[in-house]
Amino acid sequence: MYEVAVIGAGPAGASAALFTARAGKKTVLLDNGKNIMKKALMLNHYGVEEISGPDMLEKGIAQAKGFGAEFIETEVTALVKTDHGFKIETGNGSVEAKNVIIATGMQTSLGESAGLTTKPGTEPRVKTIFAVNADGKTNVEGLWAAGVCAGVSMHTIITAGDGAKVAVNLISELDGKRYVDHDVLK
Ligand SMILES: Cc1cc2nc3c(=O)[nH]c(=O)nc-3n(C[C@H](O)[C@H](O)[C@H](O)COP(=O)(O)OP(=O)(O)OC[C@H]3O[C@@H](n4cnc5c(N)ncnc54)[C@H](O)[C@@H]3O)c2cc1C
Image 1: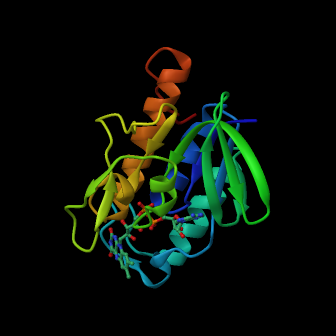
Image 2: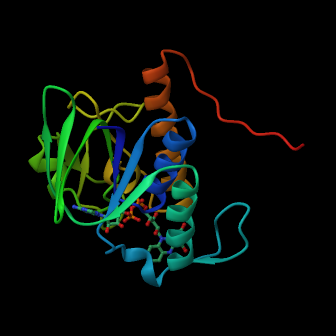
């Protein structure tokens, strides 16, 4: 049983997973390898002069893994609420997690089939988003949403930041106090 499962390893999901892993929460990050950023070039990500979509995706997953998240490349086919959390069915077996952060970008069918309330998107080309509160919580207890699927602007600095924000809120709820993840130069 994982403490946290993150579905989608774009900027929002990988950022969320690296935070939950660093916080010592047993984390699994799942992605189907079909990210639309494969042709993207980012020149507007604060602190990074230039990075390609493939490089950002690879570094994001590597960073999450480096802090202890387990990465599984697979299609998530179903997300089912159970008495103890969630059962996440994939193309190659299932995993269970107490909490889930869904970060599936423009793809909302998985979340919709899990019972998430949706509403029309407001960003260009984004038809549907999940209804979330300011913390990133959905209508399903234990299921949070981050990034484009939660309605934020389609820019990597914003979606990655939203993933981090939602992860910090989830960690804080699990710990029962506000969480801060700071390192200092030695
Ligand atoms: C061509 C292009 C150029 C861009 N250029 C810029 C730019 O210059 N600057 C900038 O800031 N932003 C740019 N962006 C936007 C940026 O890529 C988005 O903000 C970002 O990709 C969205 O992040 P996300 O994590 O919310 O979603 P995504 O990156 O879309 O991640 C969602 C992930 O979930 C996976 N997934 C979905 N459903 C499932 C499932 N059922 N099972 C398993 N995995 C699943 C997807 O395959 C994907 O990997 C560009 C995007 C594109 C497409």
